[in-house]
Structure formats: C-alpha cells, structure tokens
View (cartoon, one colour):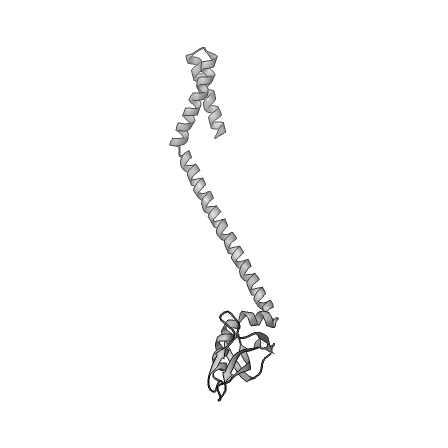
Length: 185
C-alpha cells in the first residue's frame, strides 16, 4: 500500500507542476491530493473491507486460541484432581474425610437402631458423629469409622455413653458392619 501511495504522490506532483510554478503548491498540494486519492482508492477497492475481514479473522483466531487455552487448563485441572484422588486413596484420613458425610448418614441410622429404648446424640449442632477413621481393608479401600457421641437410655431411664464402629465401603456406598458397646474413648 505504501508503494501505491508513493506512485500516487509522484503523479500528483507531476500534474500540479504542469499547472503551477510554485514549488510549495506543487509539493504541498501533491501531498494532500495524494492522500485524498489514496483514501478514495482504498474505499472503492475494498481495502476497508479487507481490513475489517482481517480484524474479524484475527478476533476469531483469538477466540479459538482462548478456547484452546481454557480447554488445556481444564484438562490440567482434571488431571491434577485425578492425581490427588489417587493419592488420597493411600491415606486413611484423606479417604475417610472424603467419604465421611455419606458414612455418617449410613452409620447414624444403623447405630440408632441398636437403642433398646431411647437415644440422644451428644455431638452438638456442628460436631461430628464419626470422630475417628482407620482402614478396615486397605486393599479394598474400606474404612472403619468410630465415635462415642451417643447415649442410650436403659430400662431404668438412666443414660449410658456408647462407643460405635461402622465398617463402610466408599466405592460401593455400602455399610459393611456396625458394632455398638458401652463406654467412651
């Protein structure tokens, strides 16, 4: 585009030099006239459309690259999450914390059914019913949750603290065993 303007400038200067003898008018007028001619040529030949098309293509390419980058970040985050999940399977505390809510729900009902008369939970509003966790079978990724946050009422109306243990299979979301006996940790 620069070469076209330079040719236009030379032609304009040449034409104006035939019309007038003033060098200021020839060169200044030639410059201004060449600018106007280039704007007209650029507009009528589709130069503006070409620039707009290039800009649209550039924006589309930027969106594609942004989408690819976002997908790459998402894939990296998923990979990291999967690695953390696999690492968590080797630690009973991590594995137990990951599944404690489901285990609490299953274990709570099973422990309550052991009460002959009445029961009351002593864990408070924000407390945890399952305070300890250990492997039941590490190879099968099963856990034993235990706690002592419940009291059973006996036949005389007295309350007795109880210890409970629940075997839980997080992989299959299944309660494996429940054991309740008197005492505290």
